[in-house]
Length: 277
Figure 1 (cartoon, helix red, strand yellow):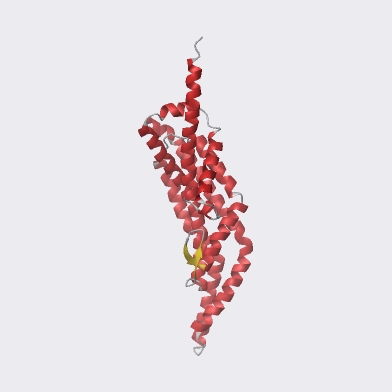
Figure 2 (spheres, helix red, strand yellow; figure 1 turned 90 degrees about the horizontal axis):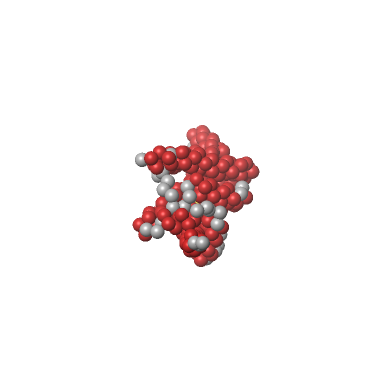
């Protein structure tokens, strides 16, 4: 009896699994390293890389037909194209996470400008740049709410969903991803303003009241009086709004994950048409 097929399968399967781990690592690496999720935790770069490779190895273990993947990517040109495709798909997923963090940071920046903290700059270890006080605080709160709302579990489920709909090494329709990107970019300002709206509107009313006082009592120096008043009232309104801000941040992450699901479904539906072309 001829058992040559078994020997060829035994040599191709480990190679296919290694290629699957490589491609999944590129997708996860682009998705995680381009967002503040891993940078919010103080860990060496080697630990981040090992964490991504470990997750990729666990996810690639459930992928079927790894021997077929090795045969399809035997050509170096096909392998480079597959690596570029995985990086692009991971960056596309990272854009949604970055939009959510940017919306939370924009809410803090709006409050900084309204309260008067825009001049004070502190070092933010999440983004590694100088940012105003409330923007830095909102960045840390956004990461905290992300983990408290099981965003990391949803992120891993989304990564597994992309592997199910777009297996490693398979081409995916880039043009079909444009509506998802445009929708998420447009939602950045709406989500950011929704987080800061109560405090910003309250401070706008404070500015209106101080304008009326300055009009009727010109002997008061409203510039010197207005700054401490806005700081005290702004922080008081922020403290009152902070109790309900967690739900608003959770809705921000829910919106991003739902847009992911809708966008990936549209991209998956466009796959046969892309293959026919």
